[in-house]
Length: 311
Image (cartoon, rainbow, N blue to C red):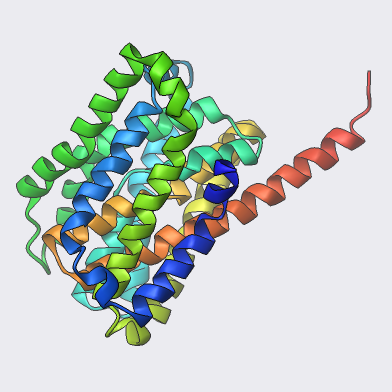
């Protein structure tokens, strides 16, 4: 039952977005809850991790290295390029670059599982990129848009330590020392994270209800293009490097699916509500595109399994 509810994440996100757009007053007052909600998401992520997820990096060091380079190179640069080509304002450009500069999202782990990818590799990559993002995200934003807008690098770095590093660390410790208790509530973690991100999306939509009709369609186009480039580059770069199909699919999701909830929270905390539009739309779209692609790859896997000769 819980799994079915979380699988319908895009539906809940769209439903609450429409509600927030039509009745902004329901969510505007929750503006100060965005960071606490994100902290809950990161804590849930930490609880779902274990020390072996970091040890797996050694086993898959080449794949992880390629994924991290693609993650923090292609996605930020593509975000800036798309924003420039579409003539975005400074606020919207900052929002796109933030989405491109954050770590991979936890939904990539689910997509990798559905697509018959390497789940252990996916979890390890998400963990490593999340930790690296604490330092790389503010530095990348400063490098790419620092000339047009004031980027509080130090403040952003400290905020990421509080929002990401500490909650993930606490969650990891909880999972390490209270495994039996965690096992009892493990199925609830995705549901808790989903509820939190849905409310974050609704709050941002409510705060931007006045100008979404004007900039929303263009930002949506930018988000779709950005996500498509990430998925495509992640997959075909690994194909060219000779990785197996399972690894290629996994890295495609790690590169293409961003922790857009974090980008949204950073935009609201350090820039403006308009800067959070890209992260909000990305949160909805990457789950839709990821689900569609995972379904396609899973069906291909099943067809190959049926047609493969039995020895």
